[in-house]
Length: 408
Image 1 (spheres, rainbow, N blue to C red):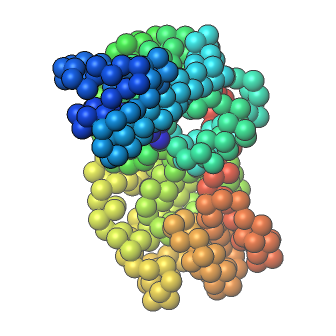
Image 2 (cartoon, rainbow, N blue to C red):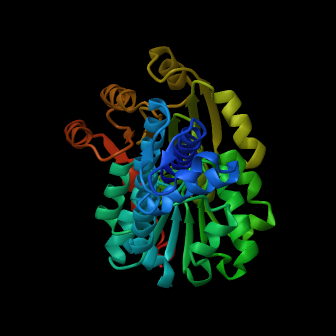
């Protein structure tokens, strides 16, 4: 926003100077410098520029010439000093702002790129453990209200800029930073920033935390030397890790026989849940059923970069979780009435997750049913308690599982 205003200021300055030159060219003179009428073009340019410095105080006021010329010159007389004053005030505001001076002496700080929901989650957890840790949040653009929210809620300094630019890297004093956290919305841009940071500040190796949205891209990048010097994570994977470790494995160990698991929704979260089950509970499973509108393609994509399978049986069902026929097909291949099967409704459709969970729990009361919401929900908690459904908030799982070493 400041850059845009600066560009407009240059345009206005050229317009003011052009008005002054045109006024002189039309024959307007000055009460203290009447010779300007017959002066050279460069002399008129000199007097036009002088309006930005002295505002005409020692060269007199417009006189003579046509009315339109005097109007143009008077406009320049008022416009030039106003523009000069605004530029001076803007510069002083930047130099004297707390953020400017904080960055001049800041050290042992965290530089955080991004302004979305994951940024809030990280800062919320950080402030619980380190209320006074100095944090600089970098964004390419930010609305005024959002800026106030971040500054006042989390006590951070806001810097407008791009972490892939060398000037910004130096201004942020990364040589003295303790950690860099990249929470931007563009994966390639985040890796690009990490690459440039490590090239200039190699001591930050393993102290750069990078969130990657695209699981497929993340798994590919994990094979690179750059990724080995970073801490790379996916928010869905972080949430799935917490769900499996804290709630599912505990249940599996209580049951005598291997367990049946149904994952309804095989997007990023569903794939992450399966990956965690593969890593930590593979021997505790008898069958895993994967349900999604695009199940076959998504399973193929997941299998391309991670091994899916083991001693347990795998069932793939393609279709909408709202369609009863899909559940009839599932019941034909997975016994949902035996023991206590686990069913996880993890699609991005929060309403459908809750509706389907209530329906399935009525049909199979013995099942351990989980329903996903994105944020904490008193409604989901109330209904879950009433109907015996385990509701979980994706955001809460993420915040509960942010490692302590990412915060210091």
